[in-house]
Length: 380
Image (cartoon, rainbow, N blue to C red):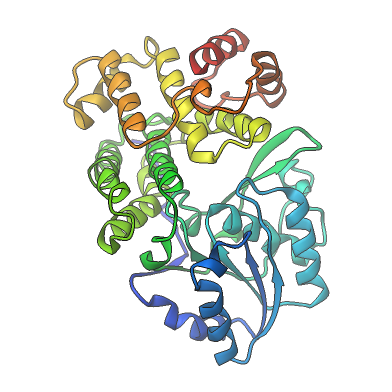
């Protein structure tokens, strides 16, 4: 087991009607609030009006930035940071899923620094301070509500990058499963896939002697595999929404990384390329890449894949493990090949070019350019 430091400063408010405590928390930071949200779902499900009424109850001065996309882009972050900077906001309030909260994390560090957001991703700047961030989560998937990571697309630079800083942990995150009930079936399934992928990225990371962390991985995935299909058949079931929401948070809040030197983020890096090129929803990109990656790595990581399968499916071989994982992704309605997406014509050469350009999957288990060609074939 590797040496580790356990640290997570986010206060998590979980359960029905926890949002009633939002004004009390925001008042700790100030009255000038930058409200950041997406393209309309919070208006449709009534959450926007509820948030506005809560802000009125504390006499907040509210500045809004809306329209954050499901694959968030750096231009929106720069524009929102300019609004926050111009109005000298005291706190950023992000209301939405992973894309909104990821964007708000970068907004929170860009406001005081006055640097273009992409400078952080290009490692041309490092944050020294941040406007406090409070998050209200509406989609169980990424775990961003309790971690310091953010992902953005930069189409001009042909890349989708990630950045992390301890300054980007939300100060408080509010998770009321009621507000995930309106998430449609396909995006609910993508969220289930995303939390499974995050668990796998810890499992395949560096540090295989972290046996308790392995058991936490199995438990989180088994929770998703048991209750995820039930939820997809009963989308408004509060208890099931709560189970999946909690599992998604635990999958990427550091819990499964204790005793490991690092995670294996190669699948995510390839998935980002698919999202950049074809606007594939994040979770859907992962269900395409993960089976292909495991097939490619079958001989190199045979024992590890077998161990995973034995604990999840009772399987005895790496091949059976991969087959069962792929079958589960299909069962919940996620694509496992690019051909499953429909409406796109994937270009293997273009995918390969961006994999080489971004040095995709060169983390713990490094892929070379021949591996890139092979995994692209497996994804097709």
